[in-house]
Amino acid sequence: MTDDEPDPGVPVFEARGVSRTFRRSGTRGRVLTTALDGVDLTVRPGQRLGIVGESGSGKSTLIRVLDALLPPSSGEVLFRGRRIDNASSRQLGDLRSSVQMVFQDPRSSLDPRMTVGDIITEPLRSPLLRSRPDVPRNHGERLAEVLEQVELEADAAGHYPHEFSGGERQRIAIARAIAPRPDVLIADEAVSALDVSVRAHVLNLFADLVRSDRLTLIFVSHDLAVVRHVCDHVAVMRSGRIVESGPIEQIYASPAREYTRNLLASVPKLRVRTASSRRTATEVPDEMPPGPDDPPA
Ligand SMILES: Nc1ncnc2c1ncn2[C@@H]1O[C@H](COP(=O)(O)OP(=O)(O)OP(=O)(O)O)[C@@H](O)[C@H]1O
Ligand SMILES: [Mg+2]
Image 1 (cartoon, helix red, strand yellow):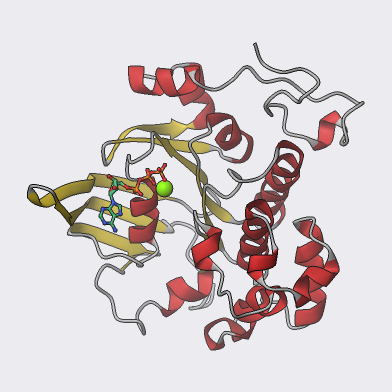
Image 2: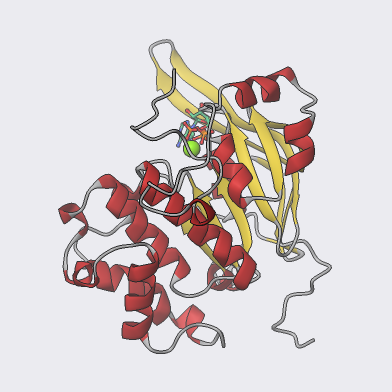
């Protein structure tokens, strides 16, 4: 193993007692919100971790702290064994070159002045990534490849983000994140704005990526059926804490917490799509919401 290769025994991410508070001005003066409250988390290489929990439970805050976009108020965050909380941008080089993120709101994460082609290929041109052997060298070819993977037309490359719908913008954000073949992909509600058939396709894309590229995936979603399709582990968040975590089948089969049982109970009854659908059953996650031909009760 060379110095550049990650040690498979070292966790990709570790959070130790991580808390994060926010101060906000309210009608009664400054209000303190505890978004994260003593979170311990270990993400191992190749793991596909789903983070689930009700709205406001701290999911987005947690991944922003892991990606060093937000410093924790207290606790430690390590990336491949090195502290990254309060690290300098030079010390974050390994993190920035290895991890790509799909943000929850693609409207604010895509630069409105850049064409889609430039947005997607920008990470490929980054000096940080240029030295990585697996980063595609032919940018035009890679652009065409990822546009096809997210089911966008090739001519999308010449247009600007505002010319696209919310779901299309989300796919642009996904294409940008996967373009440099990152070691670690963090996706925050990456498929929530997609309609059922495109969501099935993009979920299969995530599933393929984790299989073929030995990707470590952190996949945030409020939708437990979606998480089950792409993840092997799950962490359940509530009020800034991880209240339950473990292998996904175990949590699904016997959730220890009523909160988790309630989250599971709120998943709609799902079924395999039929051959009359646009895609075949084997291409589509077996747990997609019912289609318009068979609406839920
Ligand atoms: N920049 C901020 N300033 C003030 N409060 C914040 C900020 N970011 C998050 N919060 C608060 O922290 C808590 C957790 O927010 P977070 O965005 O992490 O939740 P979430 O689980 O991602 O929710 P959702 O499922 O709705 O995306 C919320 O109460 C939120 O209002
Ligand atoms: Mg969020």
